[in-house]
Image (cartoon, rainbow over all chains, first blue to last red; front, side, top):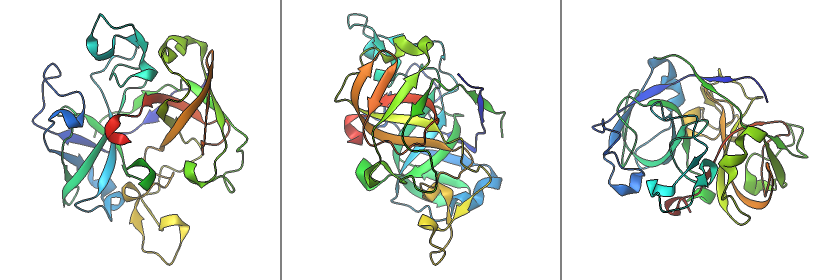
Length: 135
Length: 135
């Protein structure tokens, strides 16, 4: 197909969530606030990010499996297997997590966000503002 | 921070859009339908994807710059420079494109989608169904 493309983490999630077994699957299932802690080199890229903004955080789900192509939805073996591109399973060829969250606080290169279901230590790849059409 | 993480493209965009200078910036700005053509190895991952589904397509914006941290929004030099994490500029440390589109047709490993603003040849990284909270 083509060669690999290298992603460079720009920061990391600091969260009370440490156990994949008990972590919520989506942010609306009771995830706690968390900090996104960016590398100092990326401070300029945060300019203009402010509390109240709705953003999409892209993460690298470093504990996910990449060799899974089909899953039972929600882990329910009674449901027919579905391709991972038709589910939000973390296990997929490129396990990029997509989290829609609200910015609560910006403190230098630390950004506090609500309802982030990512595990502590998860690499952060990108932050994008939510567009009107995505609301 | 941490080492690079390798993304493996799972397919490619086939689109009439070939010129970055004239391509629309977002799908709601008049982008045409396009095909996502997946590698045969990923056929199982498409199981369950059907016409009418709203999906998020993640792409690798291989013609974007990765060394840009601030931009003038919409290229308007009269507007103050803003960090790329507060804009949807394609130029950013990890230029992952995020496109919300509707599936029009599924033909083997080819998936036709509406309103995709990605250029012809753009690598596809992932497809995720839109969640209720993202509608």
